[in-house]
Each structure stands twice: as structure tokens, then as C-alpha cells.
Amino acid sequence: MRCGWLNWLRLPRSELDSCRREKDLHRLSELGHFLKGSSAALGLCKVQASCESMQHLGSGTTGNALAEIGTLLPKVKKEYAQAEKWLQRYFGI
Image (cartoon, rainbow, N blue to C red; front, side, top):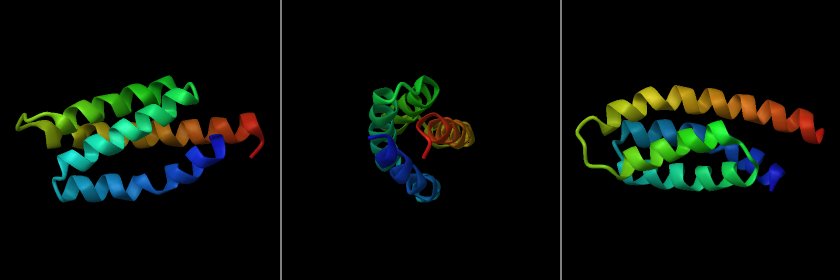
């Protein structure tokens, strides 16, 4: 799972930005849900919490959802980068 998460981690960064540009809240919610589960399985609590926020924002109907996700995405990417480095060091991959 750890290697799969790291490999999959590289893909959604551009997809997250693309979905935001396309205003695809449904897909952002799906990505948030998927990444939340993967992060939780590995004990990555910060990433899990941020992805859960993205999931809920994406499934919401508020007019500010895209703006809030836009604010959240840099945080998610930073947490991903930190988690990726930590996992690589911890598992020696």
C-alpha cells in the first residue's frame, strides 16, 4: 500500500488543479474521499484531515466552495510532499 500510495500521489496533483480550473466539484470530492481513505490507512492524519475537508467542500453547494478549495489545495500539496518524504525515509524507498 505504501508504494501504491506514493505512486498514486504523483498523479492527483495535476488532476486536483485541473478539476479546480474546470470547476468540477464532484471530482474534487471524489479525489478527496479516495485520498482520505488512503492516507488514513497509512496513519497520515494531517493529509487525511485536509482531504476530508476537500471531500466535504466538493460535495457542498456553497458558492464559496471553489474558493475554499483553492485555499486548501496548497496546504494539501504541502502535506502530501511532507508525507511522501517521511514515508520514503521510514520505509527506505
